[in-house]
Image (cartoon, rainbow, N blue to C red; front, side, top):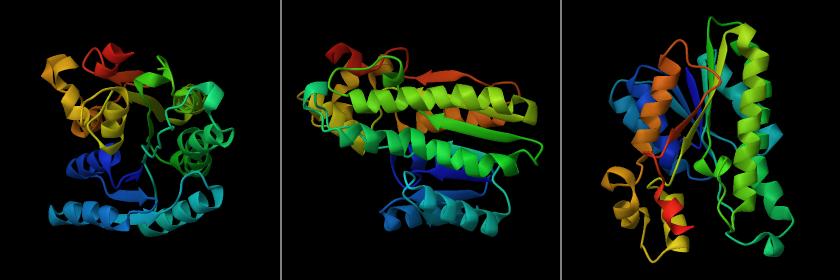
Length: 250
């Protein structure tokens, strides 16, 4: 059974659909867009799968606890946690960034992941296997200018992954990071417009490996591989085709 944060849109949506296609029951977390979350649930159920939407802003510890309680009451357990929820920073240099922005971005990406792991890991220890997958970014280790809050948050998330993986190795819990480059999502479209004259992420296909930018399904494929294999642990797997198109715009 999988809980996918940010599962109503973009990368999280693709992951929820893929895990369901592979046989997992899926809890689809969303923050505001209930209609989008219910659409994911409907698509899963239409193919014979099991899914339910759960509202929570992952940066809020109390909302996280309420969601986890509701998910466990509905499904009994969570074998797989995929933390895909994320927000972008405003694209300003450090000297012009509001002090509250790094806290807000960090809270969603890193603190939210920490809250959920604190709540879910104890029951994972009671199962034969548990998987935690954090969706990071190439920016986690190769930051771009004018994006410090986002890069800082992804770096913190990856540090959490390594720490947690070492702590839970003896309990049969695998912790891995999947780090895409530019992905064709709403967030990716905004980033492409901010960095170039392209109208959307697909407008940078000519700069991307294999002639196209990363798709949400490419990330979902990697998550499915990670949770489906037996001996991959404490790894950071890049999903950028060998070079994100944003590298050419730095």
